[in-house]
Each structure stands twice: as C-alpha cells, then as structure tokens.
Image (cartoon, rainbow, N blue to C red; front, side):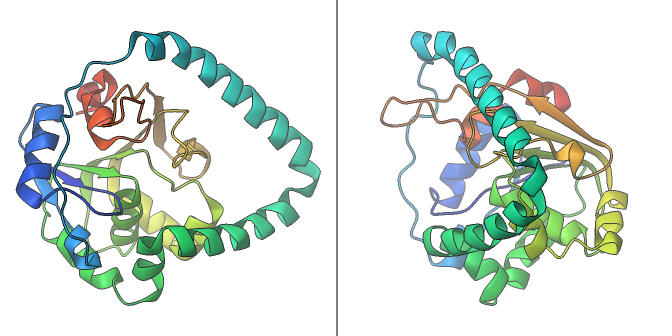
Length: 244
C-alpha cells in the first residue's frame, strides 16, 4: 500500500527531516510531496515532535470545543438572513487578508506557481492513499478536479476547503466539483474543532460523500503550547490511523 502525503504552506524542515518526522508520527513509510522549496523558503531545523501532551490541555480542550461550537452556531443563526451578502463580503475580505499574510496562497493562484506545485503532486501518483494537510488539501483538490488522476482514499487533515473564497479560487463549477468527487473513491476529512485553519470543517456540507471525523490534535509545539493545526499531531491521532 502506497501512502503519499502533501504538506501545507510556509517554510518546512528539509525534505529528509520532514519525511522522517512524518513517518515517525504516522508509524508507516510515506512518499512525501515536498513543495516548500518552490516558494523560495529555506528549510529550518525540526523540533522534537514527541513532546508529552499537557494534562491541563487534555482537561480543558473539550470545554473549549463546546464553547467554540456554541458561539459558531449563535453567529451563524444570527447572520442567516444576511448570509449571501455577508458571504460575498467575507470572501472578498478573506482574499485580501490571505494575500497579505499567507503569500503562498496568492503565489499559487495568481503568480504562476500552480502547475509547478501540482507537478510535484503528480509524481506521487499512482498511490492508494493521499493524505493532504492544510494548503496541501487545496492542491490535492485542485489536481483531482482536473480529472487526470484518481485516488482510492483521500484523507484531508486541517483542511480549509470549506471556506468560500478557497472554493472560488479553485473554480469549483458543477463540472469540476463532479470530476473531483469521481476522482476519489473514499474521502475522509479529519479536523480538530479548535484548528482555526479548518474553521468551516464540515466538508460533508460542501462535497457529497465526505466523512467528517472530529479529533483532538494534542501536539505540543516548541513553546510548550497546544498546536491544533500540527501536521504531526494529526498524523498521531487514532482516528487517522484507523482511517488508513
């Protein structure tokens, strides 16, 4: 069984270092799709991804999740009559914010990096399972929507694919949406409700046949704080292990 994994945006440890840390976290060999170098980033030393989880974080995490979900429901209910207007303005604002603070997205969609990055992913095919983290999920969806590649199982983790402006940038017309779904036999979407990147995490509302699975990403970062979006943390979850 061949497992390919595509990482998310921003700078990363060197290829071999990142691959080794991912394999240590997931407990299996992988084919790593590495594209940080295409964006001009210099690699940085990895930190110890095996730090123990905080007992306090284990206790407080469920409470935070309930509060966050309740707040989201209140906001959505309040804004429902104005959803169309709010959604359009939010998408426009989001594009400006992400263009300024997450330049990888802007480079990918607007500055000629799109095909070069997708070429890296193309080289990982054929594969049985494709694990796509963060912006890696955007790249995976973009390639699969082209209709040139298929995968038995797609596992998205910490994926921002539910955000309106991301879907607009992917140009997910009805035809491309249907092509995307036909390219994937099984799609599992894994998210931590406290992960800000996958804020709109219920992809089953956006894409037919997706199975959403809520997890707790308990990874501790180099500062000793919980890192809800951590690639390593997602790979360690028992839910992802079971999905494989």
